[in-house]
Image (cartoon, rainbow, N blue to C red; front, side, top):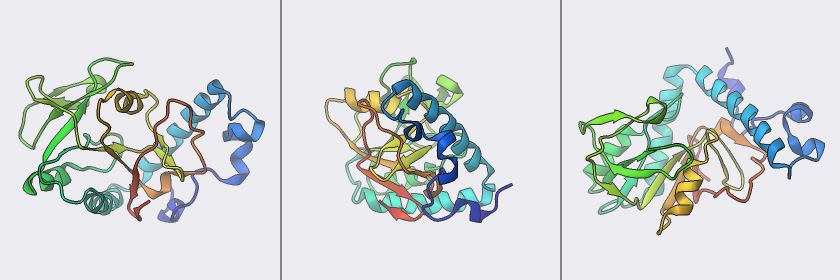
Length: 219
């Protein structure tokens, strides 16, 4: 198991000596969508494996720091609707943050994927509200919950780069959803500092985050 030193402060996820194996730009393929897609898949698998290897107590501590920085980045949430997400595969858990948002006069929602390759919707949810199983068995608010357009969206990061582009799970749901909304919310990408990459090789459909937040603070 890697030590905590293996997740060094702001270290790029790929070491220079591995670029010939993992970086499509090394072979002049950065503009080849198929090559980028294959590279992203490998990087995604590696980054998820690495974060799952972080001891649970350490992940929880990092998640609490991330949540505190996200709370600061949101500012006054009174009267606003904030969408977070249900934690999945070692992601930071923002359910306590959602409770604090409601205590401060905001509303909270979760993203809902109804079908593959389609934009998501957002349904109001608070602790204790009924849930059902959505795509990939991730809990989502019940179908009767109110559908809203959030003022702020907290998006999970598998990886990210200095230009605030996000590497997600590969389905394109957040990009597709943000592009389809009539009014763009403020988007906060939230994840671990160790997920910083030299680049994700953004494609025309990729939408950068407004803010990136890690346990190190706000980028």
